[in-house]
Amino acid sequence: MTIFKKIINKEIPANIVHEDDLCLAFYDVTPQAPTHILVIPRKEIRSMAEVTVEDKTLLGHMLLVTTELAKKVGISEEGYRVVINTNQNGGQSVFHLHMHILGGRPLSWPPG
Image 1 (cartoon, rainbow, N blue to C red):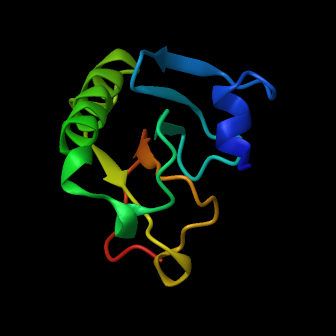
Image 2: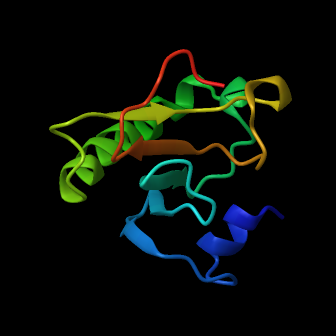
């Protein structure tokens, strides 16, 4: 069981900023920007590499949640980045699909 599944199950506390029947969002405990929120699906999907056509509604919902949260926390107007790391070489460290919302400072390109 991943740490994210434990957060979903309320076995581990998190600073949750959004929760609905499909996903939840919380502040990252090791932020890489002044604002760093993770959006995770309740459905256990290991990575983007394992997404199927059945997940398209879920993924669309999660992207809409990122937009709403960026507005809610005040980073939408100046800009932010949404990142999905996929598998080891993509920088994924928790193998439960998740989207990073990063903002609150200028973000350089290319990343890492």
